[in-house]
Every structure is written in C-alpha cells, then in structure tokens.
Image (cartoon, rainbow, N blue to C red):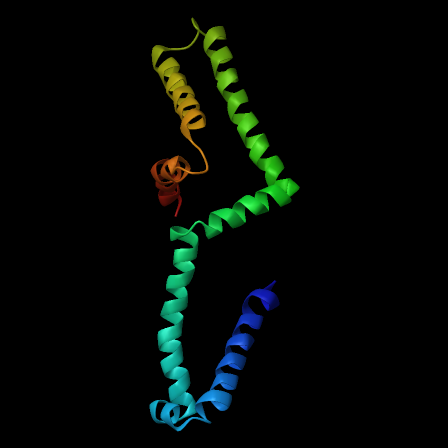
Length: 155
C-alpha cells in the first residue's frame, strides 16, 4: 500500500520533473531564460504545482460530483460496503422498534425523565432515518453536532 500510494507518487513526480526539464526546457532558449537551472525549475514548478494539486484534490472531493459518483460505483461493486449500508439501515429501524417496545413494557417502571430521554433518542433516530439521504448533509451535520463534541473530550 505504501509503495503504490506514496513511493510511486514521489517517483512519478521526480520522473515528470526530470523528463519535462531535460526534454522541453533544456531545448528551448525562451524557457531556458525562465528556468536557468534544474533546481530553479523544480522550485518554481513545485511552488505552483503543489497548491494547484491540493486545490484540484479539494475540489474533487468537496465541490464536484465526481467523488460522489466514485463512491456510488464503489458501493455498487463492493458487496461488503453494500452489505454494511443495508445492515446499518436495518439496525436503525430495529433499534427504533426496540425502543418502542421498551417504552411500552416499562411504562410504569421507569421515571419520567428516563422515559423522556428514551423518547428523545427514538425521535432523533426516526427523524434521521426518515429525512437523510446520500444527497443532503444530515449525516455530516449529525457527526459534527454529536460525535465530534464527544471525541473532543476524549483527546
């Protein structure tokens, strides 16, 4: 994994810089004026290229529909991810029904505060399941409001 993700990327970048300089810049006097040495070429290209690539990557993940399409294809082609998505939905629906049963069975045995707390959780789960989709931000909003707050205390 490290080879294919990181080391190959570094080697490809070095290869691209070397080939483009010695085949393109070195043979054209106008480009040689802009990039008088290989070191300056590397400095200029990386100082422009790295921020540009970061912006393109950010746009790919956050601003375009390309990444969402990749995830859709991954979900359709990967049976494990597909199974996890279905199982999660079933578990949420089952939990909602179990909460209903707990409320019915313990109507006279739990305090009003505990009952309100259970009902609050049930309503939260029901609203989330009913209103969320892959095209709105309810899941990430839930993560930001509930899970990240809790993890801040753990760190």
